[in-house]
Amino acid sequence: MLQYIILSLNVTMPFILLAALGFFIKRRGMIDDNLVKQGNRIVFNFAIPATIFNNVYRADLSEVFDVRFLTFNSLYLVVFFLIIWGLAWIMMKDKDLVPSFVNTAYRGSLPVVALPLLVLMFSDAYDPNILPKGILAVSVLQILTISAAVVLFAVHDPAARKKGALGIIVSILKNPLVIGVILGLIFNAFGWTLPTFAATTVDSMGAFVMPLAMICVGANISFRGFDKKFKYVTIATAVKLLIMPIAGVLVAYLFGFRGSDLTLIMILNALPMAVGAYVMQAELGGDSYIGASVLMITMVLSALTLTLFIFLFRVMGFLI
Image (cartoon, rainbow, N blue to C red; front, side, top):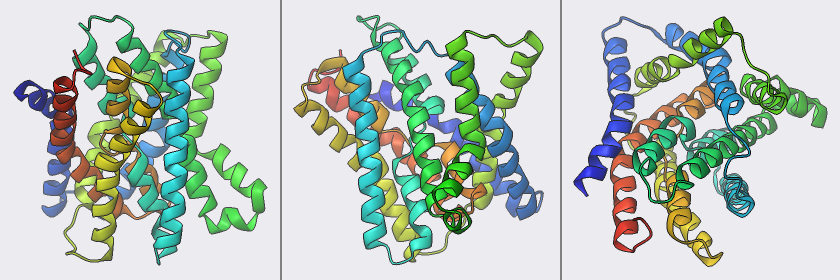
């Protein structure tokens, strides 16, 4: 079990340390709120779209194309998202916080945490199809999670709602993350390649997503006490790390998934909150406190919850 704790910490600790650095330099007065806001804007408009473009553009969308596996994961994500959104709208009195709560409760760190975790776990697996199947699922689910989040914030945007359905659609299409997905799909579908200088530039832009975003996260962390927002932070954390993966595994088991497929489904749903989810939330007028708090707490606790899930799956014989 110790090896899985070390494995999880190797993936999540860099995020935690960078956020601690952001917290430290903000408290020392080396950066201010305006610089943090500008940093979020740079990450949202350039760095994350570049990363998304790279992941979609370079993904082999035909490799190990298991329709049943991809369909289940896609439908589960969409249905879970809609249920959380509906329950939040019904139960939360402060409707302005609904998109922030939902965004933190369902969006997992697919490209940043899932990919290295899958590589570490399945590079030497007895079944050579496990790793490419997981990587393909990450690509597909990343597109779905971004699309769902953009719709979520667009629907709750008063300016977009005033313009009706057309305003919401325009708001979605103007989102830099959606533009990154669309361009990645176009380049992938037509087999286009970037010139070396352009590919190097895009790689460089994507390289500072994690450092800059996590420093901004740390700068936004503050303990407000056990108020209403902290209650939402606690619930969103429980939903993200416990309810989403446990429900996903139970439903998948009922649908006949076993072994490596069930393990992949567990990992894809037990991830900490995505860094991009926080950046998007901060840039689109969501609650930065909820976003930063859930991101940090899930990053820390996921090292324990993921390890526990992996250990249980090994004991039950689903992970060999």
